[in-house]
Length: 108
Image (cartoon, rainbow, N blue to C red; front, side, top):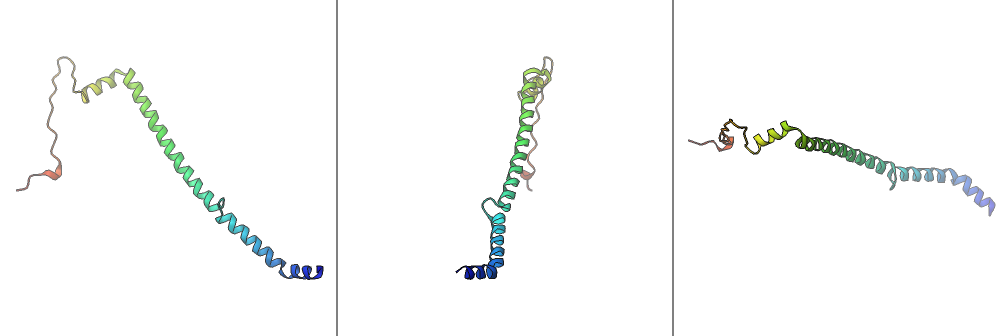
C-alpha cells in the first residue's frame, strides 16, 4: 500500500503541484478578494476621494461667501444692486429689456 502511494505520488506529484499552484493563482487574480477586485475598489476609492475634495473646496467657497455676506459691506452692496435692484441716494436705475434669444429671430 505504501509502495503504491509512493509510486502514485512520485508519478503525479508534479502534476498535482502545478494544478494546485494554478488554482491558487487563478483564485488570487479572479477571486472575491483577488487582484482585479482590489484594483477596481482602489479606482472607486480614488473617484470618491476626488469627489470629496471637490465638495470640500465648494464648501470652503460657500463658507467664505457666508462670511462675506455677514461682514463685507461691498458684497452686501453688490447683491443689493444686482439682485434686488436697489440704488444709493441720488442714483437712477435704468433697466434694459433682455435681448431676444437667437433662435426666435423673426422670419420674413
